[in-house]
Image (cartoon, rainbow, N blue to C red; front, side):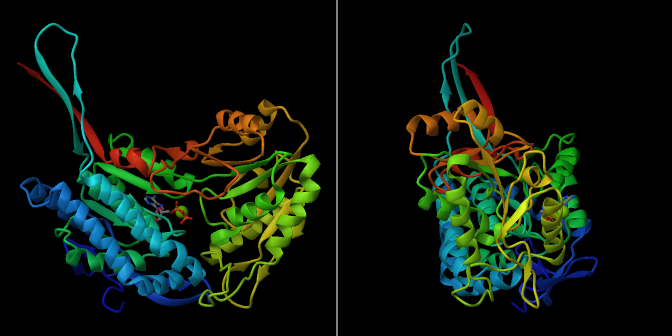
Length: 483
Ligand code: ADP
Ligand code: MG
């Protein structure tokens, strides 16, 4: 821990940032600074990109075969598993997540993600084609690494975010410069410390910490970076596209959401209540695909909403290191103020607090799980992403699937959607009508690396995970040979 604090990882070496500035890291459970990270600038980024370009050039001369990439990713997964408790403690202090969640989800899923992507390294292929134009041909596509990948990740799932960015890039044969979020950079730095022992060539993965405005922006505009993979807010995604678009970079952006949960009158309400609560309150609502907008049929609203509120009110909020804690703080003072602002304005707009709506604890950024009823489609709380433990409830009284889908499709986002029904035709009918990158029926779970993840509308561009997520780190070359 001591050795990695305040340093950046470039070309296989720990370095000081060129400008020698640093940033505090605050534990959201206490509100106290507990570490410092380097605030890298454009000079540091340029060094990191050079290292990545160099590593790719060297790899072209051999010694970094698909099997090598697969093995390195598998070994990195093993290394995470071997040091799982160390990762868990770092992640807990950085994010405020309950330790039990980190032990059950963040750490093992980071390893699982790397193993999944390891499997792709030796499985990417092109195709052979049969041309119709006159002549004799051998025509095929070659799938080649896109180049150096600049990766920028948010603070809500730091270790998983890093693993899910590094995995596909390495599988595809790219070198990486990763900039973690300034609030939560430590687990990525610990990951960097494991790379050499796992067989990653120097410079293949570089981890550079710093602010978005300085380090992040420098990465986006660097000419040596062929692809930007960004996960974060829609506002920042738009800014990245504005800069990287004219440079013709390949850009994937995974952005915000205001994901609807549609509950039909024939739904299993017990299962729905548990999953809806989990879906919005897990990780204190700081999940891009959180089902934050409950659209419930009026016939069952009076039955369902109190069940959700009861689960919310019964959740154990508290110290992240207590294994019984279910709900930790939100990430920062700024985020806490932002969330409470949404709640205050929702009440002023006429929404009614069923449970929560207040801060908790003497220190740190704890917010009680909050259910707001009587929400109308035009209210801010029905349209804007809160990114906190706040569920907005709207009711509807039609059974017409077009009308219900129109409610679900309102607003600018299209990341995820959830449907609860026991009717197959309602299930399929709504899946087809709802515009979102992901639609889940009768579950908030089923998250798997093999499934493409991404958004439509203002929720982003492109897909991560699955075949599509790995191929997003490649270019197709069309090869035609006259024979
Ligand atoms: P938030 O404001 O909640 O932190 P962001 O989307 O701004 O969410 O941040 C997600 C990631 O994007 C972080 O790593 C952050 O440092 C980075 N970032 C923020 N602004 C920029 C920018 N202009 N260019 C590149 N990266 C940025
Ligand atoms: Mg920001």
